[in-house]
Length: 299
Image (cartoon, rainbow, N blue to C red; front, side):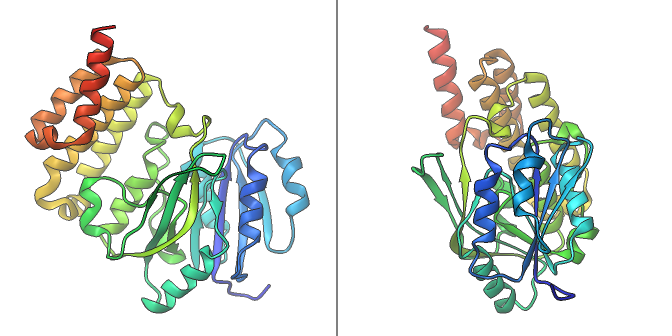
């Protein structure tokens, strides 16, 4: 392997022995081969290490560390990476064969950009498409309205990644990626590719789908709002949209609580979202909450 490779794909994993092979094989099947794969086992208690052994080579590396959540595992992998660009890839997602090839074209087109995001789609394990997400413009001006980037489709230049690590606060887990994208977007232009290169698999074990503990959910959103709105650079990025940004997050919290059956708590944060911006009544999440609330009320 040459001294400087172009891509380091960092895959944190925890007890995904039954899923990770598909992810690894999709990474190794890329049409663009100038890359290394770094698998960071965040203290798995299943047979993840055994499953990974057959893939190890001079370009596939495995590290096992004490469990400390995804942000710490991603930072650990970033410190080990040798590539010019870092792609933090979730251990249950799939790279389409053109992912790194399209990324290399982006790097050439925009003259070594600090950060960019590629198109992605959400699908069920069966392969059935849920929806696709892609953009043709820079993403900075979209950040106040929610995370447009997901995690696996984002690629960051290594010097920028090392200077802007993930927040390792465990209470933030589930929102640590968007918190980082906001910090980076406050400093650099975020380019985008319209090409769909990643499949995000919507399965029952996905961590953001299984977080139904109301206390953890509330802590996560409160910490996210606190970290973002106390950062002067992020505040400058949000500008006049700060209230709208807070409204969106309180609304999302209210909806997630209601879906989990915590309707009174959900109503509390729905009211908080309205206090931040009356425009909440134009959001789809507002009507999703009303539907859940009425269904429970009349059941």
